[in-house]
Image 1 (cartoon, protein in one colour):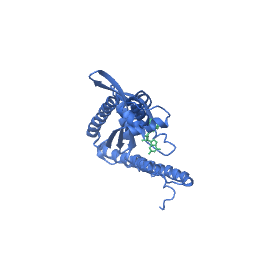
Image 2 (image 1 turned 90 degrees about the vertical axis):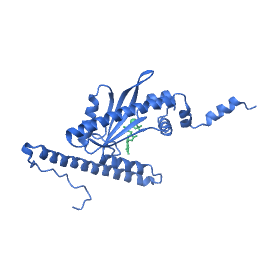
Image 3 (image 1 turned 120 degrees about the horizontal axis):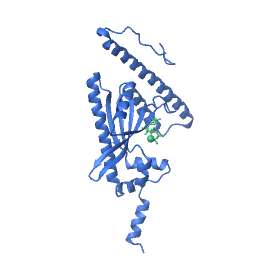
Length: 247
Ligand code: GTP
Ligand code: MG
């Protein structure tokens, strides 16, 4: 005879992992802690933006977005890693449950912001993954910084991990479109390599534009900051025209 207990355990077995995770005791508190850590880091970035924009007369970043990973996405990633979708396991193995994306205008602003973050003694920079210096094979460029942030709750101090992705507007443009294209299901196998090569080629073009825009800014800055305010006469170096260009 079917008992209440059996029915409950059958239900639990059928329950998708992400639903079970969401209902696990302690999940809400854990996510609240990640949200607090996210808020801490976002506030730190906004403070830096205010202060540096007063000093340099321009905003070091254009926009900032943050998100907590959904239970579906957490469990999807744990499955790909072949790990169980339990609280202990996600806490130990995922560094991007709390994620912030900072979009800068220029490449050197990214390094300046990371340097400022590294100097703050109330958080610890655990890892820096520089995909600007060394892009991913796909062509992806960004700088990822993993930080460990203390949060002060009624039961004491807790540490949570936050992933901060720094990108230029140009890198974000490429990554957003590449992400959309990658998730198209109907790409023929024989086209996949050509498309991947094309995307990598375009990532290189975009990188050239990024570097050129920075040179133009440096040229303008050197004029504005030159002695007696006179403009610098140094010419801006033009990169070679990309293949396939008509001019
Ligand atoms: P994950 O297991 O996804 O965290 O990969 P990882 O740890 O090997 O790489 P990393 O943490 O450095 O980068 C992961 C994140 O970077 C992803 O969630 C994306 O936001 C972004 N990313 C990495 N590679 C690519 C890429 O080729 N294209 C795009 N559009 N985004 C990427
Ligand atoms: Mg990662």
